Length: 211
Image 1 (cartoon, rainbow, N blue to C red):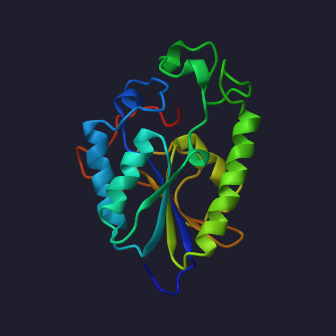
Image 2 (cartoon, rainbow, N blue to C red):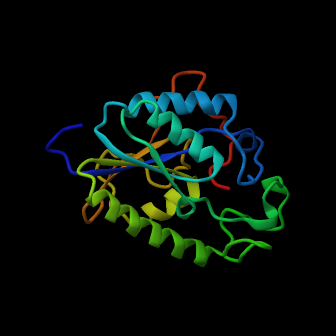
């Protein structure tokens, strides 16, 4: 990493799961698929030389496994897990095919049965983002955050996008890397980059990004 570059928060979406590919909302313990593990290894190799000073992750299995692959490439670092960085809680809809649900789960404002409303999810994400900024300020280097499609989308909402950073509004790919300045106005320097995924490691176009 350029020593003169702004300190950054590097947001990483988790690798693919079987249920991602099958378009099913995922229970908390859903692990990475064989492809997802390969994707996690690829993003770990990419980040190994990026001056990473700390790694935090959602405690859900798919994010945790992705983060552990990254720590395996970053000497003397351990991943810190937190439920604050989880995907939106879809309650009783978890484990069900997305296309069979009575509402668009990724965009509905109301809370699914036993789940989290859009407003509650947004409030949780705001608190988590503030905590990430505070944590990075004490690191002296880049902070890697492994999380989920909808959660990362909440963190990025309203942030300025640098020229050439990428196209806002795209679905986040599995193990996509997004780089954000840790200081205000928190400019997004790179959005949804999967250049580390070689041919054969790309996800299917119908895979869910969220849930």
